[in-house]
Length: 64
Image (tube, rainbow, N blue to C red; front, side, top):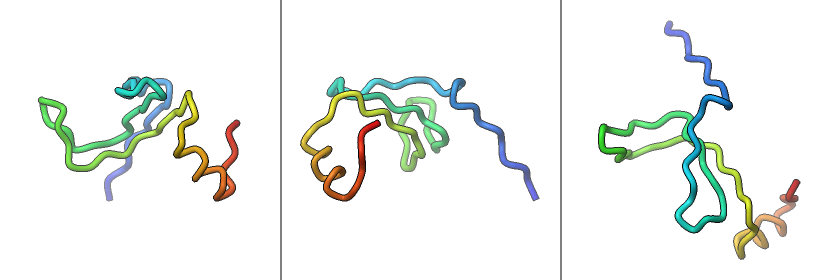
């Protein structure tokens, strides 16, 4: 069995969203040399609430 790599949050590079309302940090993906990928696991930080926030809040999500 292979051991999983240890990934430190502080080591993940920040990718700003095109709309300027947040950033993502990619944990794992199958990206190629050009940055194209077919799957990706990332952590998102939403800095500005949007209409989607209303959907999240109605389901019980609360902004920190």
